[in-house]
Length: 112
Length: 112
Image (cartoon, rainbow over all chains, first blue to last red; front, side, top):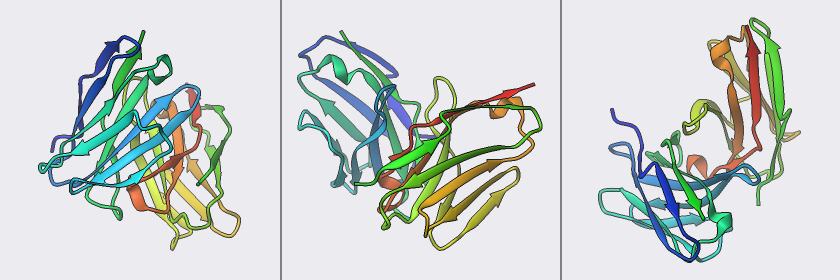
């Protein structure tokens, strides 16, 4: 069974640009969550989607947005990139709230 | 929101010894407590989890204990091996596996 797949693995963007990251969950999983991991702030919850609807949202500015498609694949978008957005962005999928969440390997975003 | 504290931040043990990592949480509504292991260049991997209706759970060399009254939970690894070396994160959630609040991580080094 394939795990959670995130693309691309690495990304370098310039300040002010926007970026879209992709996450393909484990087959059958309908819930996808996104996290930001930085050395200073650790792992922080961004948002969660279930059946194409955003169910929970963390404390991030509106520049961070996401969506989920009917096949459960999810994308997150960051607009007007700032240097502080440099981080490892992780996606996790699960069958639902009562089951375990499995993480992908992440996309490392560097903003220069 | 939920605040999870994790100690120690670094831990070195001799191979074969036990390792204990402790976490406290603030939100009494939290009812799901997973532990993740993260190796360099990889996403977090779930190693064990516990829900609030259980006080202790064991899986081979790994055990987790939960004290809901005191709002703390701990990870115990017995007979440590070099391959246990990694960063370990505790997490807590009131919304199941899809909205996790993470501790700051413990870097465990097992010395052969």
